[in-house]
Length: 275
Length: 316
Image (tube, rainbow over all chains, first blue to last red; front, side):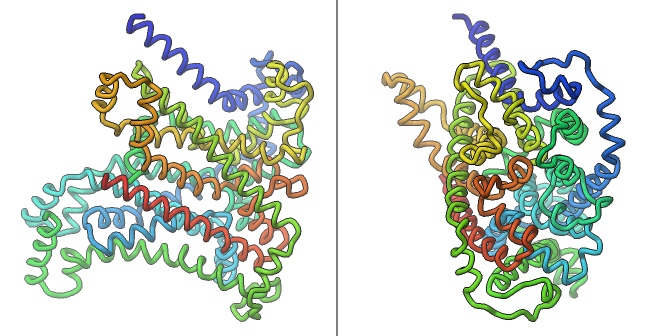
């Protein structure tokens, strides 16, 4: 067997595996385009006979998705910004020094990373309620979520900073820069890509967040799209084409961003996740 | 050595311009502020709730004293009450089944895929990365899709299984009490497989190639090479991946909310979902806190194992 035939065979197997694995995603898109009767056909059709594009418009308007998506964006953007502002400096210092206290801080951060949101929400809800933070529920979600996402961000960005040659920063200091100047003008620009990718990962995570929003945001007009999807899916629902249309509108921007940035995301993850 | 240089340079500037302000700009103060702000935030929003959780699990919390800190102390009453509830033991059993089955499935499929993608062919790394879409999707969307795939009468999974001759009658994945937990497990395996695969790929890439070449020269078969080289060399990675799997599996909430809501009759309920139900469905915050405290202990033990196994890997 020649090398090209081996490659073609392996590539075919890989494509089949990927198709099998991504089938749920395909099924979401196909179902969203089916008519109300076609989705219940047996045997199921694997391509919609007449694509029902108007379902998207209908779901968008009747479910008030514009508002849901806006709230998701507010929460995702707020969480990403707060996480990046607080986490970047922390990651930088933890990457620059290696001593007992850095180890202690890293250990604490790793410990906080593992706390499940559905378990932390009970004390956070009661505490925020006492502080009056539930009056501004989206801010409350951003604060709680930042505490959840920051450890992951710090671990990833720390790996990036460790890849920045320390000699460059020393040279800047010798040239008369202050620490702030060296950090701002030399180190940050060099670590920019890693920080951006990590921030985008946090954005995606916050864009899909559910537990905190479901528990803390009571007013429908302030809820994000995940909570909206949850209330759309009642126990005895049969509007699966519309639910899948909702899911499609919700998830397609994330998927597009992922496909565009795939290489960077995967390499960022693999460099940081095991360190 | 280089950190000493920075500290030295900072020391020189500190001697030149005394005072807090210059230390903030040029010395240790700069580092302390950067770390301090972040750590204070984390302590306030993760550390304090953690302590508050333990406090509440020893208190009586109801709608009237929810807004005050002065609540009656009840000792271990909440813990006793939680374990006296008839559904507690089945839920704990479900949690164990969910965790073990999810990790086993994610790991086995993930490892298989990772091994496959170590074979070099054009497009391998791109296709491998594509698998990670499952990981960036909102959990609730994943749950909604699987809810529909697993539907009893019209679900495409039942159709596929029927066509393959594996089942003769439809399985009602979500409403049959003997399958409802497995409905969530299937979705969770799908969700976590890609992450397992990527981390295991990193570990596989770290094994020196000459080990395999030497073994091949010595006449070792592919299976022997797997048992004597791949598995021993991957020990630290496997430890990290499995403990990360445990941590992520115990965090899984969205899939339960989107597929079965823990039902029917708690047959697919697990501890982390029950803790939320206690607080936000039955408004019994004290018992919700009690279950949370118990589960957080489990998660923390898992993460200590994780930290230890990654330490090991960095050194070795």
